[in-house]
Structure formats: C-alpha cells, structure tokens
Length: 298
Image (cartoon, rainbow, N blue to C red; front, side):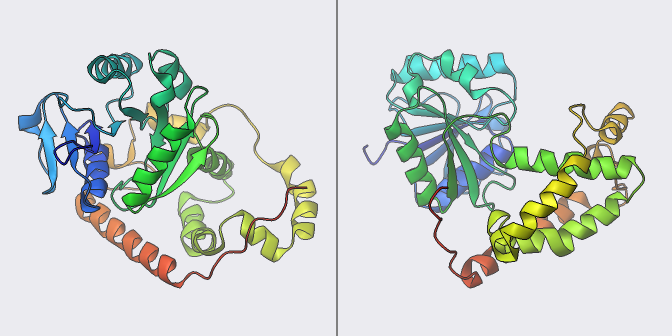
C-alpha cells in the first residue's frame, strides 16, 4: 500500500460513520469518509478526508455504515466490487440485516465480514467482527489487526448469529426487564438504578462469566434450576415497548419515552455521559487486575 492509498474508507457520513473514521484517523491511519453529498458533511474531525466517489486505489478496508436498507447495501457492495475486483475488504456495520445474505450476493465473499460498532464509535472499545461462511482467515485477521491498531478490542465471532454477541445479550436482559415493568413489579427507574449501581459496575470489573466462577458455579447451577423456569420466555416483542412505539413515544427523538426529555439539553447530556464513559473505561483499563486464563473445555 502506497503512502497515498487510503487504509480505511468509511461509507456513510452519519454519526456512526464519522465516529468510526475518527477512531482510525486518531491512530495515524489514512482515513476517508465516502458520502453521496460530500459538501453537506459537517462535523468531521481533522485528519479525515471526505470523498464523493470511490478512490482510484483500493483501500485496505471499506466499512459500510449506510442506512439499514438491503437494496442500498447490495448496490454499494456491487459498486465496490466493480471498482476493486476483490482487492479490498468489505465490512458491514449492520446490526439488523443478515450478513450471510449480503455475502451471498458478492462476487468475492471471501473478502467480506461483519464489523459492528457501538455508539459512541470513537470511544467504545468493543467491535464485533463476524465471519460469514465464505470469509477467509486473512480477511478476518486483517480486520482484527486494523481494529487493534485503532485501539479497539475486537471480538471475533465464528458465524453471523442474529444480533451478534452484545445485542443478543442485551435483548435477553431487556426482555426480562420490560416484562417486570409490564407486570408492575418494578419501574423503569428501579431497573436503571439496579443497572447503574450494581449490575453494570460489577460486570465492568469481572464480566458475566468470570463473576460466576468467583461466586461459585455450584451455587449458580442450583439457582438456575429454580429461576430459569420462571423467566419471561415469550417470543413476542415486549408489550410495553410496542405501546410506546404505537403512541409515538420514541425517547429523545420525540421528547418522551420511559423518561421525559422535553426540558433536558439532550446534546449536552449525550456529551456528558460519553465523557463519563471514557473516564470509566480509562480507569478500568488502568486498574483492573489481570484476568485468569481460560480453563480446558469439559
């Protein structure tokens, strides 16, 4: 790759795309954003170029962050493949569309993977990298290497399960939480208090699985026998969320959701919570004791 070649091209100039581009640019990698209307793109940090067309030389990695519409993604991928003939890795940031379907439409699916970020993309360290059936090992290793160069801690998944790792875990927790609200057992504020003051801090130090080793898998195994049958196992979406959706209560987008945001300075609140998250991660990464090695499989 020559000095003038873009290492990472981010297709899409929304909040997520700009955050992803910033994380690579801060690491010294030549980075650009691809936008259909480059003159209208604002808020781009220094060190990130904005392009209106695919560059002549193939970037090492192209991360697609355009709207979650299958036809749009298929069209973009076809344009990329026509331009570079399999000489670039295409990674999709999609969190809702099937990665395997995207891969099956490609001419060079071995050069494709999922690469799912979380907001704010320039701050959160975790990125999920999901292999599809055709992904070759070099594609995955290059994707992981570039992410590590950008200071990320990627998690590699051997197949693109729906929701990948974190959204699957979150949805399982949310499903139970919303059920407790629907049944009148506790409030949204109670659940958030428990998450902020116990579940979140504890998980941030010892994770989920390691914590059960610490507390005792014997106790955990017996507790599962009693509690698992009582959990909310419905395959239907949570009624309380669907009611709010039907009423147009979308959270900060509409002014109300589970909370009333109408008198809040939402941009300032987002900035403050993002800054606090950065401080917490910096503290945890500097103070957290070394984790034990993985045990042999049973």
